[in-house]
Amino acid sequence: MVIVSIAHTLLNCSPLNRTCLTQMFALGLQRLLLSISLILTLVFSAQALAAIEVTVDRTQLAENESLTLFIRSDDVISLEQPDLRDLSVDFEILTQQVRTNIQIINGQNRSEKLWEITLLPKRNGELTIPAITLDGEKSEPITLQVSSAPVNSEESADVFLDSEIDQEGSIYVQQQLIYTLRLYYATSISDHGLTDLELEDALQLQLGNRRDYEARVSGRLYNVAEWRFAIYPQKSGVLSFPAQTFSGRIRQQNRYSLGGLKHIRIQSPEHSINVKPIPDSFPQGHTWLPANKLTLSEQWSGDFSQWQAGSPLTRTLQLKAEGLTAAQLPPLKLSLPDQVRQYPEQPTQEDTMLDGGILGQQSLNIALIPTQPGTLTLPEISIPWWNVEKDQLEYVNLNSLQLSIQADPNQVETQPAPPVAAATSQATPVIQTQFSAGYWPHITAAISAVSLFLIALLWRQQQQIKRLGHLLTEQKSPLSAKNQGLQQEQDIFRKAMTTACQQNDAEKAWQIWQQWKQLETPQLPPGLDIAFTQAINELQAALYGPQANAKSWQGKELAKIVKQIKPEKETKPLGLAPLYPQ
Image 1 (cartoon, rainbow, N blue to C red):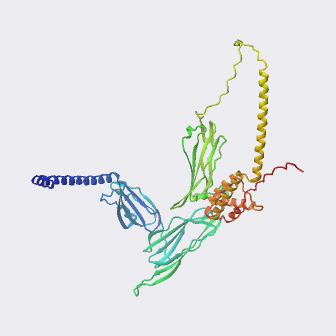
Image 2 (cartoon, rainbow, N blue to C red; image 1 turned 60 degrees about the vertical axis):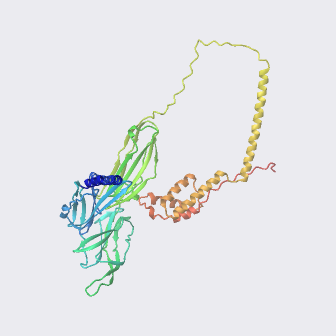
Image 3 (cartoon, rainbow, N blue to C red; image 1 turned 180 degrees about the vertical axis):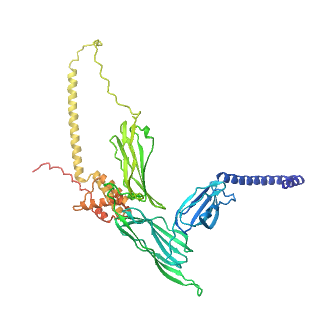
């Protein structure tokens, strides 16, 4: 009807107005078609790219503790809601929020609809968040571990502390132990403080940042702040966890007043566990590895079945340990035959924080170059470790590889020169012409001999002049340019290593020392050889020893010794002997 009305208006107006109205009608129709096209594009693209992603903020929690379920969808146009009916079997839905994010980056639409759902488990044990269905898409189930709820020592306590360790009975030395500390509070807190966890003869690492969530204890809803630590005892015996103390002020409320501030001081439970030494059955001379799981894998940069002599390939070894830090892992080394050259890079170490503790990882890249064709055998790699879950000795292995190295087709082999053919009986006739040279050959020989004698005499005099000038120069400059450059480099290394030691940077100090000793062995003052060697051994143990911990290394003593290192004294060149000795 609108288009018919506009057409009737165009027929009844003047030619000038008709032209203007025609342009306006065309512009409006163009904008309408563009809007319809954009809407259809959004709808069809959203339907084509519709996908859902379901995650949780944690997979391990205690009974009556809440967790957050996140549901993400690429379809922002659809009005359909996720099907949460199956969640009511094992969970109580406390809150549910939804928001939409739309971004246009470089002309491309990026949209997302996010649901945040707070869930409270109805029981402990192993629970499963079932598959969530949305817009015809289905997610994967998620498994949760729900432990028993902590017991509140005071039924009406507004604030209390609880702690636990994940092992019972005994553990081995350097085995991972998870210590969890939780603060429960049902009221506002001010001026609060919590003591730090201090343990003797144990390494402790905090697992991530503080977690905040809600939990119901004895029918009462609390806010919870949780800290988790990975503990590694360094010696056998009894490991004790002292009570942690929390202090602060909370507001009292009763029917006679609006509430005043009350100072509180509470403590967490104490714990202890027996730490066993390394078993006698573990092989001597190997790094002690008490882990939940240990894996050893390899990767190659190319196809070693087509390996040619003189061509490099990189072999990457990767060692992963669940329950150990990367610093506890042994260095990866290869024993290779003489027919292959190896160029290892500096190994990389990485620690990943997981719900179950720390995953330590060490990677090593080694460039290998076979020097000759034939059969190349790479020996087996075997690393012993202790399975703490089964309490037994196990090995991780990389089987030996027998490779066929091919010759380089571009390499030209040197062939021996063919023998000179023997003279045949039928020699080619030679025509000889006899003539008389007279006295000219004798005269020419005499002139040549005199010329050679004069040239040799002149060369000898020039060499003596050069030698004299060189000796005079050395007498004026006791140190040559080479020795001066050597002293400058030694001074640079000494200052750089002193700075690294003062900053307690173990890795940087070790790298500087490796480069310095390749240049020239530093000259130590008398009496410091033993102290310097001991300090270098402590630096190496802090980086690569069985109990390596680069962050705890202190370089103060090594810095004092390095400051006393002086450049090597050069022997002064002797002056010229007197021309007329007495």
